[in-house]
Length: 349
Image (cartoon, rainbow, N blue to C red; front, side, top):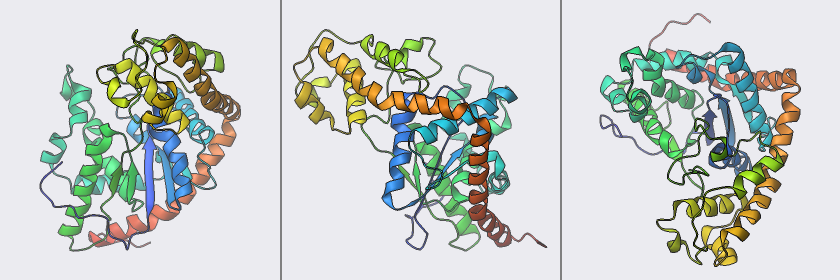
């Protein structure tokens, strides 16, 4: 957390609005579904406006093959829709179609302090063991663009993973400093929303490591493009220990693989960990893993099938993203215009 500005809580005068995004870097996994996409779909039922963005401007902070980036953006959009995000109920678009993201990011570059940026741990993590001076300026300024993504819509709530919480805290500081510097109350102070029993899904081969598309072993993860047979096979071959499942959550301590599989079952079924263990406690993994595999197939196979159907019609995906961008810009453009006015810019249009 930065310490230059005190950040009050969101004020009620701001319309409740959710904003979150996923980088279209390809290879969405079960971790992305349980930690983000499933929650995004559920937010639609909470009576709050939901805006979801494929953050392709963030993706190019490292070099991307243009054709591959287009494919991955469409695939991510297909994953959102197949996971239950309804483009009629939510706004779904790719970031680069709304120019206000880049414009507000520059304005925030002039509000954020270098000391704040230097404390962002993700840049340090991504450049660890590398020559940081060879990294793009965009990678360093990434958190400022993320702040612009959120505040361009006056979002009040930001569903994020634990690894992005620091960036939301920076967003709060930027909003507070802007309001303080310009003696206004223009930007809300958004709240991070981190919730759920499996927001951090671990590898099926090593329960101490996060499930990741970058793991060299495809057996370590469930891809959202995996078919039913592949999903079942991966769970049946997931690494476990020889002990039976405990009857209480405390018994999962120091059993990383067992805890991970129980967490996944709980998240997919909508049960608590204790409820899962009441039903399956005392079972060996020879019984539990097939049950988990069946549950996962019932939940995930329809998603992979729907993604394949959507990807067969890229023009339709592009149409959905274009319509979403128009709706997003209708919210963003007046907020950006007011920001420029507050900062003293002359605008003739």
